Length: 489
Image (cartoon, rainbow, N blue to C red):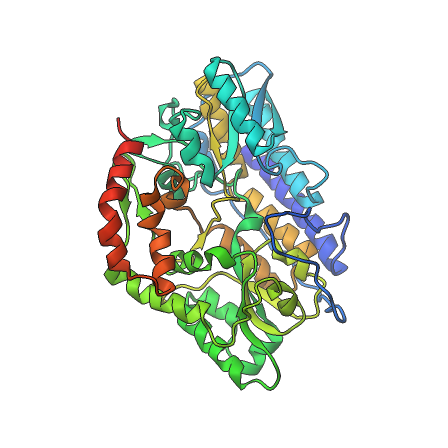
């Protein structure tokens, strides 16, 4: 009998004690929480006024154990004799912690890895490889039919290129693979293949939480505009884009120069974030079927009108290089940006909180957060591996062992280093659990029709270039032909 629950009880208690110690003293930084400079980010250092005084609050408490015994039924009882299991990663470490990982995240990785290693009798190893180098090395490995790594981790935007060149295998061919098990993100399965082919998959062990998007809000400004509690709206499922615009419109009544909203690192795909958060999908794909365009003009047109109102809001900060600084200084009501922005805002003058991107209506089932395709990491398998049972077992086990616990460690880490209240920590967890992937970003490199029929359709429609129906009429047939070619038997 696997002693899974004992491991996680100890892990959760340790994390909570660590978080409680940190929160009791305000924000204590054991090492510099500022992430390394990323040339792809437009974020610049925040000039602070008087730092906001962080108040004490109770630790956020994780609880994810109900389904774990069921999950473990998908893992064989094989013993892999202490062999090394190598994962090659083209981004920052997500398996083996290094000096860039915080204390809380490192501890969770270590607990998780120790459990996986103990139960399967393996030794986990991770190597970080430059994306271009990884591609070239895998090309040579496939050409020579030689081993490269047991698993690789690549961005979602690279899945189509790797699959098209034959550098990653169909994960559906692995023995015992259960894509419906609950420990893989179901939308990642739909986003990474079609016609009984799944080239990659994402779960809690691969999610790049910092790259997910949120709505940061200025509590002081919002209190001047409404007596409503935004956190309560979120909890009640009533946080909608209509409510967002209601507050944004009211900024015009404030005395002084204030912005309604800003976006910096998300500005290039802001329309996409709104579209997905509104309950729509660009591409749908049920396992065993060909992918299809998932929206109609009738469904998309109201969302396009909404996008226009948000991105062209008269009080919006249109200086996309200054949006984070303006928000940190207290001059902006809403900031739509990545969760990584928390570190830049942690010493800012504004009193801020975090909520998820709004829904289109209160009736919409859930909040939805689109994963950025260049940051979203997926597990994949190079076709030259030999022991496919081991690949299946480790892939399942590392995601089962991460399920709920790694997201909660991220939320606790955010609470301990950056956040101003416990409700924000709950919303960070809510955002992580609302992650959505879409096939249009996975295979856009393979055919112009893939992106032209989907996210470029919505972007162009919201920019007034063309209507949704016109784009669908022009590109749907080409999209279907592209799917037939990419996922042919």
